[in-house]
Amino acid sequence: GWACWKTYLGRSEADGRRINAIGILGAALQSNRQPKEALPVLEANLALRRRYMSHNEEIILVAQNNLAGCLYGLKRHGEVLVIMREMYARCVDLVGVSNERTIMIGSNMVNSLNENLLWDESKTLVRDQLLPAARRSLGADHDLTLKINHSLANAIRANPERTRDDLLEAETIL
Image 1 (tube, rainbow, N blue to C red):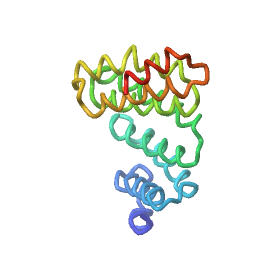
Image 2 (image 1 turned 45 degrees about the horizontal axis):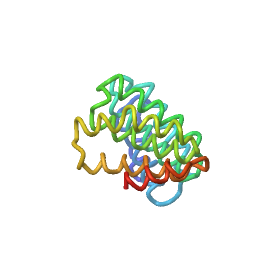
Image 3 (image 1 turned 90 degrees about the horizontal axis):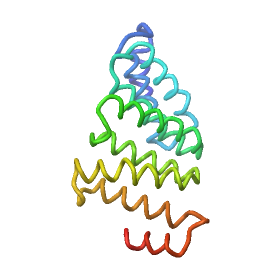
């Protein structure tokens, strides 16, 4: 991490290797369980990628995902949800709701909605968009489809306003 960053530190802010080096540093700090130290590095990485690499959506999505993972580790779930919403909307616009990457990001957004106790929104997203898209494009037995089913059951069970019928539905799903 640090060695990579120091190697490219003297280059222009717009230099791709320098930007990649800051991303590597942020990822290394995060993987070494140093989320507080990783956060400003990952924020800078995302800002630089947006400024100088805005044409490459994939790179920006990866940087957003890394930042969201760091924020999750810091238990800043509201901020994670903001990023997940942006990522999901962007993927839907770019490649459609049935793309596996979109479905995966949507699944992560469902988990974020559940972390933020937004049970109804979570259930609606799963039922109206994610499950139909996952079943259609990946198949009912695909790991991601099964994970989304599990997230739906968890959203139903965890909702403090659940009814007996809701619990029966959750049990049926699982």
